[in-house]
Image 1 (cartoon, rainbow, N blue to C red):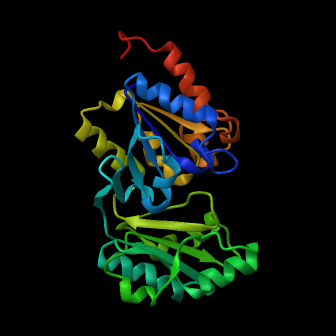
Image 2: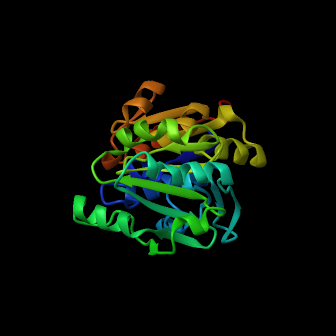
Length: 271
């Protein structure tokens, strides 16, 4: 194991969406053993970076499902992928297929949401799950600079919504979900697996030397690509079907439990 990549929500983070003391200790131990640590998340870097305050061993963050690569050591975005114009127009055309859709989106300048997204989330859940997004002009006015788009429906869950919109969205974009009530769309090829592959190539880390953890559909590419890809006990059925490797529930420090054992078993000869 030379590189550890982990999803955050439902995977590395605990039940309170924080890094537990045990997980922090594991990250420090792994880094001290020479393991490169990578966070791979559907979150924007704007909300992912604060989670690692004081944990400077986590340099690389693959954010927005791999559409953005952030270097925490330099404090800057290394790259981001923008959804192509034709694909963006198909995303906007989903309003012709289903009523009661709400949108939130990320661009290089910030994260935004429309009024229907906020209103419907508050009606359905009593809270706004798309936190720290700001109200903005219509998404149509920003269609040429979209890094990530969230689509929410008043009644359908993320799996049902993805299935209903799949034909309209078509090819030319990456569509997934992270376990929340919306589907997530990024540029074609902008997903965690391809982002991790590019980063490993730049760092000179072989695929066989990578270990990854995830829990949702947006982790499928990363878990499939990694030398050893673990599904959390609380993972989506598609992820559980993809790999036989398991980690305990995220609320039980599942990633820490597995990595502690991998580090204990690690020898120079094996690496």
